[in-house]
Image 1 (cartoon, one colour):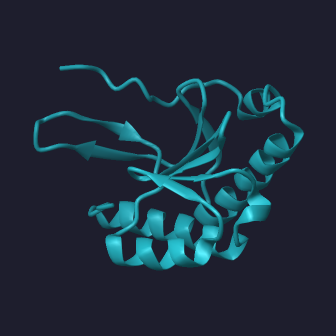
Image 2: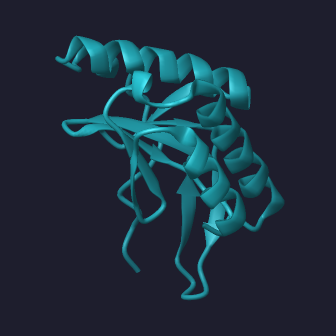
Length: 140
């Protein structure tokens, strides 16, 4: 069975963020780290070379594949900030209607910059993700 490529590393979150060239994206990344730490109580950790995650959970798929993933995470990408979240369909629709300018792809939420979204709604999305992951039913 294939090994999960996204695993927690010992790489420095600070060093990674310092490699972000765009000053707005770098400042937004630092703000998101503070927001996610405050909302989750978990320290930021690097997952793979470019994902900043908070907390972890163990998953087992019906296929038998299993592994560990961050409870909630984000990554500063060329297109903007990508948030890896887990929301039930009803709450997902409500939050996304209130969030502000964004795009979605699979379980991810993409935003260009933090000023495009409502920070309190983003914080609620993070908190709901933590609750969903801890419930053992992280459907999204």
